[in-house]
Image (tube, rainbow, N blue to C red; front, side):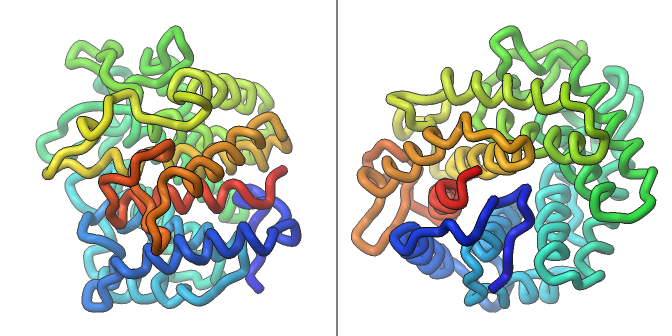
Length: 343
């Protein structure tokens, strides 16, 4: 049995048989989207990284290693490009997947790739708007929340992994200092999508994943520095999201019905799971049970209102079962996994 780091899943021995059964069914359904020719889950490059992380977290939380081959195959079949492209957030999603793979396997190739990806993303830090990472590289377009939150999590986690590191800690601290002062955290303690061309909050959608990744990033930076103010800030954002981005206690994107996705944009199908998975990292790191009922509520609603006969899991956790894909499957599976091993 592979045990999870405490910052991911808490006490693996507390897993109930019923909970593992639901997780196993969700993971099995997710793997129906696995392509052995590409080594990827689904057809979206960045969402394949997110889905791989879902499987990694599932394995760590339950000890089920049935799908561990997917880690190796994704790496082997795609490593030639170092998992880099023009979108810095895409590169960071893969960097995080490889850092977690290193936690699981202790194989240095995964850690080396995570470092390569972090170094690549850092090339897009400049003085525009006082600092921060660009979302797109060439041309450099849009300083936004997700690219910078991912860079924070990746660099802080790398520091916590590499003995004697100072480089990644310096980058992580610079990132948080800049992000905190950027204006993207609004008066409701929610994070808008990014900055305008004049470097002010653009007041665009407060997507759930923008409230999530920052939580894991601040948890990692807290582990690096011991500064409890980081946990205070993260918990404030988490409570705001749990209050303002839910209906009946169930997480929902700030959009309506099937208008949340389109035939060409399936990105939001992944967002809620990223939030819940990141909130779990924060909760376990902080040793707080204040979000336990939230985790339980998401899983219960998914099981009751969002699961098909073969445990196909759609986008809308309070129902109906709709917009089912590898992306929505991984997202809801994240919530099922988060509901076990509560702190």
